[in-house]
Structure formats: C-alpha cells, structure tokens
Image (cartoon, rainbow, N blue to C red; front, side, top):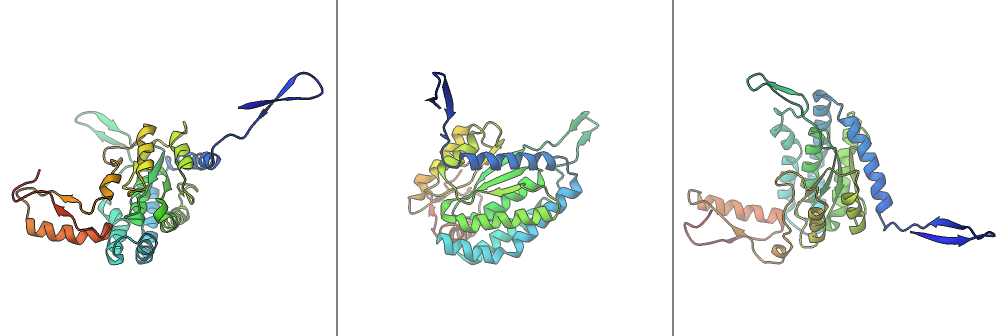
Length: 288
C-alpha cells in the first residue's frame, strides 16, 4: 500500500507504509536464520549429526525433573512424576530407540539397483501442546536434529515458559556440540499473526507438525491445515478441540487384548496428560 505525497512539484512521491501485521517481521527473521542453519546442517556427516543429537538429548534429560515440575506448575495439567518419565523417554530414550538408524548416509541396494539419498526437508515448524509440552518439544527438536532439519518451535500459550526454556536448552547444547546457530529456535511470544506468517511464507517452513494443542489450540491447527504444508502422516493431528471439552475419552481395545491390563494402563496414563480417566467405548468384545 502506498500514499501519494505532493512536494513542491506536481509529481507524486510514493511512500511505502508499514502495513505488515504484528509479528510478521519477526517471523521472517526467524525463517531466514532457520534456512541458513538448515542449509549448513544438510552438509553434516552422520558422526556429527549423532553427536549433536546426543548432546541435545542429554541436556534435556538432565533437566527432566525440573521441566516436569515446571510444566505441572504452569499448566495445572498432569502429574510431575509421570512427566519425568515422559521427558526421559522423549530425550535420551528417543536417541537410544533410533540408535541404529542412519538418516544421513546414502544407501545402495545392489539387487534393485536403487540408490537412496536422505534429503532433509529444510525448516520444520513445530506447534507444541499444553498437555505434554516439554516432552513434545524434546521429540520434535531431536527428530529434526537426527534428520538434519532446522526447527522453529511454537509453544502453546498455556505452556509457553517451560516449552520455550526447554527449546533453548536443547538449542544451546546442540550449538555447543557443533550445530549451526539457529537450528532450533522458539517463538517466545506466540501469536496468531506470527504463526500465520511463519506458515504462509513462501520460503518455509517445508513441514508443519501439529501436536495436540488443547481446547485453545484449534485455531493453530486449522491454520496449519490451510497452509498446505502439513508433514508426513501422523504429524498433523485433527482438531480435537471439541473432545477437550468433554469429561471423558473413549478407549478402544481389540478383542484379543488383555482388557484388565489395558484398563490399568489407560487409567495410569490419563493423569500424565490431563488428569482425566478414559471411559469405555463399548461393551465386552467391542473394539476395532
């Protein structure tokens, strides 16, 4: 948009007005930094990538208890002891689970004569929830590191402080281990205009990962679907805002499942998220 200004002559001078919504300049700066980091990170070998991911995971695991207490205190959701387990499983536990996987080195199949070349997606935008905020930050950040991607974490407003601090802790450990600066960034003050700008920018992100954002996170998820860049299967969860307003969740079990054991685990797992007990989805013998 421009405005005509008349000087001493009759020739108008175009004056550009600052019309970008709040947060857009910040979003552009974060994307530029992330793109540079992703471009540099794409050239790292497997040994460097493994070292960086392991260092970030260790940094997260070292503060698993602190972040568990912080998340419960800030959000009012869950049980700290359960979140400690999740934080450990989502940090060093995740690295151990993927220890034998190589997402960096090209692979050659002599039988089919196919060469597989792992290629990073580039910049990933990760929207994290209020129910398991720190564990989700750990998982999405570490998966990005293991696949040589840069990630921009946008925390849920209800869990902004603990999520942002966790992301910064992993970023500092990754950079100290040799990762390019900006490989993990976090939106300290999330807002709808800023998130929309991050998702709509032509330069990125290449993938948008939507976590369960709670009953106040539906707008973020709908914006993610509209952007057309939702990630691989499973990374874009449906908007479950209406479900969050209910008192119970349904639980489905196969006919062959140990119903008593499954019931106990379901009840034990519920407080780790929102402290709600799931309700049976049907009578005996029902299930997918």
